[in-house]
Image 1 (cartoon, one colour):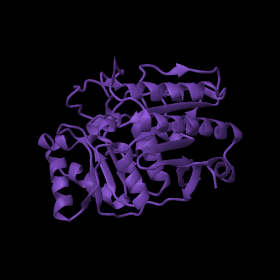
Image 2: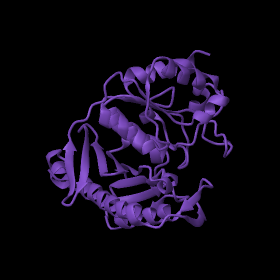
Image 3: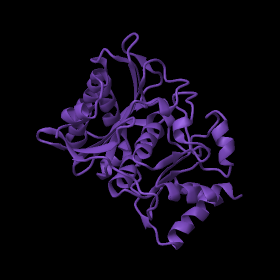
Image 4: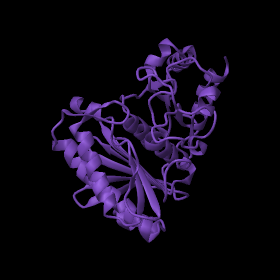
Amino acid sequence: MQLDEHLKTLGVSDSLYEVMLACADGIFHIRELVHVGTSGYAGTQNVFGEDQLKLDVASNDILMKQLSGVKSVDFAASEEEEIERRLHIDGEFSVAFDPLDGSSLVDVNFAVGTIIGIYPGGSFIGKKPSQMYSAMVAVYGPRTTLFITVKGKGVHQYVLTDGGFELQKESIQVAEEGKYFAPGNLRACAKNPQYKALVDYWLDNQYTLRYSGGMVPDINHILVKGKGIFTYPGYVDVPLGDLASSPARGDSADSPARGKLRLLYECGPMGFLIIEAGGVASDGVISIMNKPLEQLDQRTPFFAGSKKEVEKALEFFIMR
């Protein structure tokens, strides 16, 4: 079954259907860029002060163009742009995206991806990930695959074939336990003894390391295998409760207290997928779905995957 047919069987509304297919078309074109496009730096920086690759800029342009053609899209926000764009007045949906997550891995030929969250119309400020209607995550690897979730409709995986995105696996579930670990931000162990103790626990208990350096392929592994944990705490030894309750301001570029992952562009949509598959996603204190967005570039610690694995991991940060 093709993506468009499957969305109909899921009971997706006509307006949301149009937005999701526009995003899928954008993903198809980004996939072509990743596979045959020119790498190298564009000579510009994004709002976070990170050097932009040519692929970052081109991928962003593709998705913005796709969404501009859908009149039900109100605002669009990209990790590559400083402000949210008003595409149409009073549109039913607003769409946030990271057009090419992990783009620095392209030159070494690792898998990268696209992350998309579809919200009710209006500005993103003040919204929570729990308000999302849908999340979509593409993985550009040896094959191009796509995960989608629509609230209450499960998580489903598609693979790109000559005929388009074809349903590969329906109603994906994440088990409560699973001894796979993907430890993002390992450099934090030098300043954060709680994280070092957690990593030692995984090693001592013979967990299997599955870490690529990219959030998309690491979350992809959890969804495909149906178990495991992904973590990305901050760099410093600060109680997670203090980080969760304060605005995401004042971090240094090299050692952000909340890590480098953004709530709007990365953790919200990824958390939505994991939770809809039966797992959990947390900032260390509350569900990532209940975390209000105070600014577009807001960072957050992130713990996601199998329920018992996340609970065990957070014990290391709670026991101080």
